Image 1 (tube, helix red, strand yellow):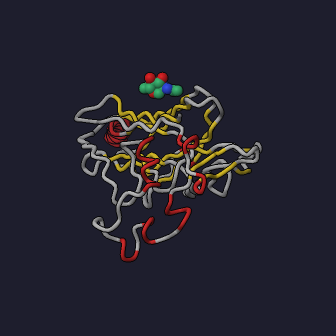
Image 2: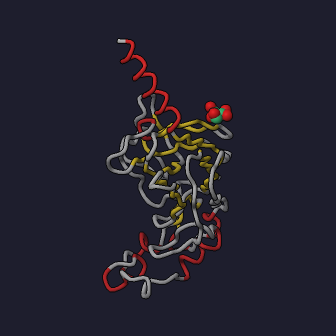
Length: 236
Ligand SMILES: *[C@@H]1O[C@H](CO)[C@@H](O)[C@H](O)[C@H]1NC(C)=O
């Protein structure tokens, strides 16, 4: 029994040491609801959703080697059971996304940890709904921050705009989502980095968020040698 007890303590301790801490912080002036979707084979964190009041931050612990994405949802109305919908980023099943993805357009913070280094990016391939940035902290290695803190909705081209009930622009579609053509989605004969190039649409996104992915073959030119670090994911 004593041996078993020691083994359990060691096991618990090593999980504690190897866990990764994500701090989600809402820097927007409105409440947002973060969605969290684990990649296939990884555990869902916080049942896939949580509320963040303005200026609120919350910690989410992920096991070593976790892979998945965070995004923000806006204009949500949930009842006490977490049932309801959002204006942007809605995952279709309420507050707790439990593996469901957010509806585009939604800006994404994506992570693949310990493989063997940590890889992370901000992706606007599915469009933009909220500014989102990644700040590694407590790092060993070179861990660049990724800032996408400009409100792109203010500069969204008219044919990519998504408007809310009040007529305001609440999100900005990617050209791929809006037009569904091989040229913009890098599919078919454009499934090739020499043929699928930045467009005048991706350039709006690039100007606002230079270190994010704006089309499939984009190269944000960050080098990551990050490991055993924690991450602040900031909205706005
Ligand atoms: C999150 O964890 C960090 C590091 O342990 C701590 O400094 C911070 O106060 C925590 N934040 C919240 C909101 O619990």
